[in-house]
Image (cartoon, rainbow over all chains, first blue to last red; front, side, top):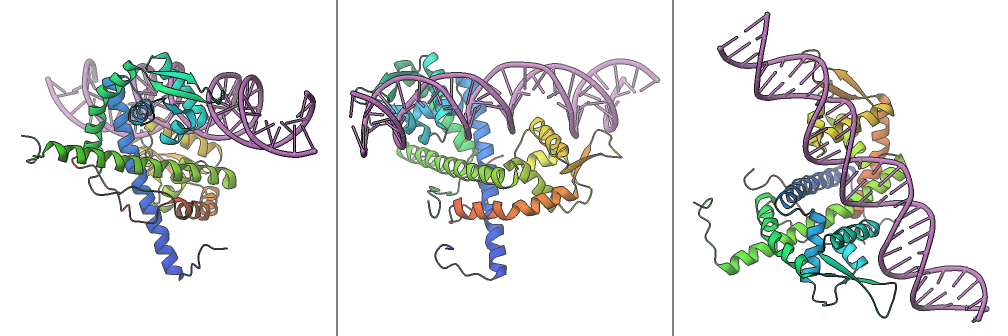
Length: 150
Length: 150
DNA sequence: CTACATTACATGCATGCGCAAGCAATGCAT
DNA sequence: ATGCATTGCTTGCGCATGCATGTAATGTAG
């Protein structure tokens, strides 16, 4: 029931515990700092939120030419399905993306970049990269992949 | 001229660029996953938001017996001053913390735990630690300290 | 064909956040 | 002592988010 045969002394548990907390604090602070800096810079220089930029980037770099399904985008930018729906709504209002119905499954919706959307992404990308270089710790946080079990 | 003698070929720049982006994606996804799990678990089992818990924890573990200044708390939990002000307001309404004026500087306010606040934190802590153990990548993200220059 | 479950997205609603402005106390000039 | 900047916290406001729900299309019995 308890994972795969975990068996630790109390002191070890405490040590593991505080290491976990320290790691989480590190991730949390790193995220807050970089997130805030990206948000401000993109908003100031390109009138884009970070989530907006990330969606544009995903659409611009996806190999699929038809665009992306909504849920795929939601996963890509770590947003709820509802948040993404509204986000695409905003981007569509601004003329940066288009919604297109899927022919086979008429429930599905493909979002794809407009020319203006691609231009905005290309314009904002240097800012994004520059802020990352300024605010991300240099050392390798490495692709912090998936949780142990999930 | 450019920092401390940076001199890279284009390909190196590109490499650095994509590494930075990959690192950021890793931090971002890790944060979203752990944050979400903590938020849900604490809310469900202890009727506490993550920020609430973090404030309680900081107050419970600070060596200073008088409590903490508001701004110190804001820094500790990566929140804006206004967000923290309201957060303390909620906690005070719930009877988990108290506000006390600072005698020397009557602008300053000390927040300190009530007995109930400490009890709530102690009750919630195992949940917090358990979720961390479940959702945090095991490997050492290491204390992701400060940005290169800042 | 009819019913029910499921999938994919949209929307009402409540909440927490940041920004900018407000207000009181303090520090520092002149 | 008077004026001005600064510090520390609070508050009005708009906004993005998540949850729960609604709606439409699809899949699956029976």
